[in-house]
Image 1 (cartoon, rainbow, N blue to C red):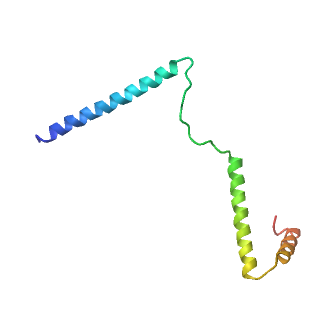
Image 2: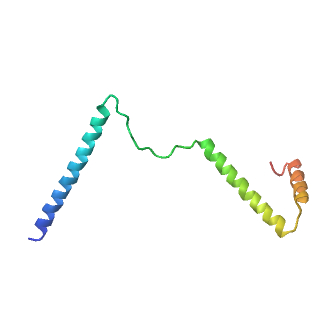
Image 3: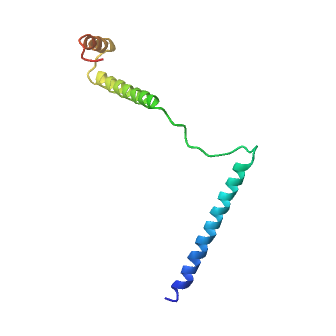
Length: 98
């Protein structure tokens, strides 16, 4: 038990030191806010993307995945672009794809 007391007091001292550092930093930040002509250098995160931008990006990724898969199928089944284009137009006219 004798060994625990010095460690505990060191921990308390360390906590106090860290608290003082934090308190000093906070006080400095408040002083900076009170300066009339100070330019605040507040760190910010990355810009927020709108839902529309995120949906557009997702749509582009789906389109790229579709094109990649279509190219691989055309290659696998040895189908020319013209044949696949005709098939897609036919499916579109029948309302099978948008």
